[in-house]
Figure (cartoon, each protein chain N blue to C red):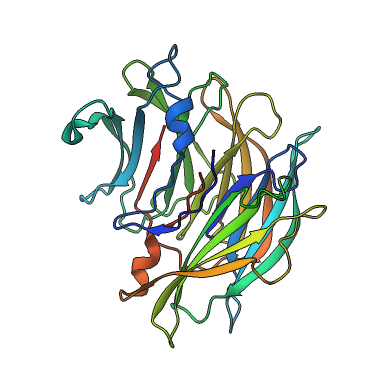
Length: 141
Length: 215
């Protein structure tokens, strides 16, 4: 588990939870984002709603960090809070990279929108070792 | 407020903050909430023999000169972890009692003996920490590393008080656990519900020895 973000992803005015995780399953060690809803009627409960594969982590220790953030990144869809994911990893073909991906959590199950990110950009390429990527953070304002 | 996304890499630590909190939630001034200054809470390890975990509070005043804007207000040792292997911590500001002013919660791994939630009690007019309440986390790992501890907040039941969200990887069963706590006026967190994710979390978490928030 790497990071969480709390927001009303499905527009029902009740906050939901998104969690970024790295599957410890060879060979890919995939990154996944999971979404959960929270019920406060009677006994409180947390229910899994959906997940999306956000990419391949690669082999240890070439991946390092996931940071999650959420916010309304698309004004055309005010009812959907989108999730952004930052991933830093070592690409053997292209040195260390840090990438940012953007997903949308949509109703009714508010899974993220398929396996493809809405947007992926390479934020930075670093000459440093993978351990330096432990400094990643995402900010939504 | 205009939404922007700013992924960035920092030299010392991951830092998360909300600009909105610096304006709306202001612990020092109950009568003038819209002010243009802030407090900063910093939690960090101390690299001494006992591996203390410490908290420091700072005041930020933009009306002062650049070199004087950040002033240390208080600092206190939270806990002696007793081991350099302790490496997971997180902190967050939230208004758990509905008084419109943010409070602070720390979560950290003790010397391979589980996770502790600590709520420091702050004196508003001085920002001094007078005492604290701590609880062990239910289903927190009792041995081994807990590479990631993450905190979130939301008013799930819309009672005007923020609830605390805690997520961590349980060492013993390799599952990710999400818990939600209410924190009452006695500052003691009370578990409301939890879910154990069926997925794996890899041990190779990141070194997170320092976290900082703006209040």
